[in-house]
Amino acid sequence: MTFKSRKDELDRVKLKDFFHLLNELQLKKVLFFVGIGFSMITSGVNLILPLMTRNLVDTSSFSKFNFTILIALIAIFVAQLILGTISGYILRYFGEDAVKRLREKLWSHLLKLPLSYFDSTKAGESSSRLVNDTGVIKDLIASQFPNFITGAIQLLFSLIILFVMDWQMAALMFVLVPIVVAILLPVGRIMAHLGRKLQTATAKFNGDVSEKLSEVRLIKASNGEKFEQQRGQGLINQIFGIGIKSARVEAILQPVMTTVMMAVFAGILAYGIFRISQGTLSNGTLVAFLLYLFNVIEPVANFATFFSQLQKAMGSTERIQSILRLAPEKEGLANHKINVEGKTLTANDISFSYHSGEPVLHSITFSAQPNTVIAFAGPSGGGKSTIFALLERFYQPDQGQFKVGDQDIAEVDLHNWRSQIGYVSQNSAIFSGTIRDNLEYGLGKSLSDAELWHGLSLAYADQFVREFPDQLETKIGERGINLSGGQKQRIAIARAFLRDPKILMLDEATASLDSESESKVQQALDQLMVGRTTLVIAHRLATIVNADQIYFIEHGQITGQGTHQYLMQHHQLYARYVNEQMVN
Image (cartoon, rainbow, N blue to C red):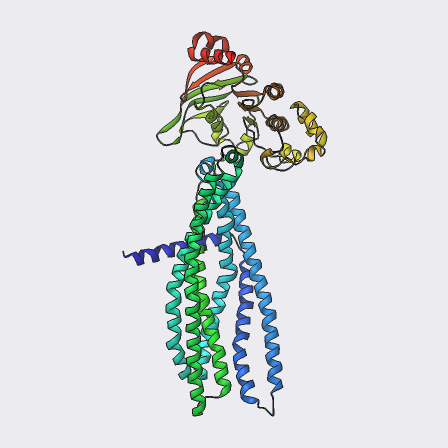
């Protein structure tokens, strides 16, 4: 298979994917065809104008002007304006509706993807697919495609009329127009290639900028401004280079096209004047012929833009489809809901690796009885947080299973399972918005002020919230930047109280706090743990001492288990771990 045939085959596959994607969106096709219908009527009216102009020229003289035809021309212009406005609005509405549906579909799918996708893909790249690539598709179906259809009809009927009017003049045009096409097609391919490169470079830049701006404090604290400026400048220069290439092609194309069109116009005009002098062509026919010439050249010029935009849209479709083809999280059985209260949570022979050949957990087995506290201790990087991620079903174990009672949690409805878990991490996530928004997040219902204040009081957070002028309506900034670390943790704990989870998971929730904040947060956690099955990644010695069972994890394996007293006597590394904390 030759390179060209291979490329043509790939283009056909991409085009098939494009139409398949549109079909999945269940678009308002009737609206599209109504808009196209109005556009075709507008084109038909546009085809009448040159004939009316011919009649006006041929039937008028200095002493007598044909006002009837002039009035008809004005009426046609007005009709064309009204119909063009209606068709433009309908097709624009159709395009906006299409991109809305596409973005809804893509956004919904992105939210259902497993964490492994977000681990390997920058957020900015996904947002570029959601905003930029969908916009390219909208431009094609709302603007370029209707222009292509109406342009093709306009071109076909203009050629037919031209041959009926004067086949000799039309034959001359047929010699000249292919020259225009021969120039446009290769240029269109070049522009499409540059357009795809520009989209890719822009998505990469968008992803990098989003990542860096989200951690701008790290950049400033590390004096990284100069490095990031140079890195960003490199990406900007890459986009600039592609843009310059595109500008160079367009700069060459524009004068070439203008010159060719003027040459075609001048050639036909000269031949027409010669025919008039011979008495074989009327003045009106020449004027009409030149008007029809523009009806031919304009669609041909637009075809190059259409095919360029089509190539971009197929590239965008390919990137969007690559996301839509990714399997979402395993949601279990929709009708399989359980109540975990009073049931034992067990892990049976769990093994897991983020990347093939790089195991993180090896044959982890443990059990958590109802209303008990289970602690996981050990060196950093041992796999403790990964156990929590697997329990949340952010990832699927490579081997083994988690059970509640006799039920494999992988078979439980995902929403039902997560609704019974409260997760407080070392850096609990806080969204921009108000304190009320964050407390109610994920609950699926609005709570009364009394309920919210009760949750805050249980988390020892009500006092500092009352000190804010706007209290529950206080704006806390992006990622809670207007709150201290301890305040964010207590808001997260209050949210967990309001969630009323059956299983509580605490991932070193006081590790990054000062002693005063740690004390308040620990008080809140101690109260939150009452009456729940609690799993703790231990940082604070008091939590380790009071746990019903402690599992010591090293290099992804459990090397010891038991109470604090037992492990102090029988596990050398655990005893050293505790003694080091006591010294510090």
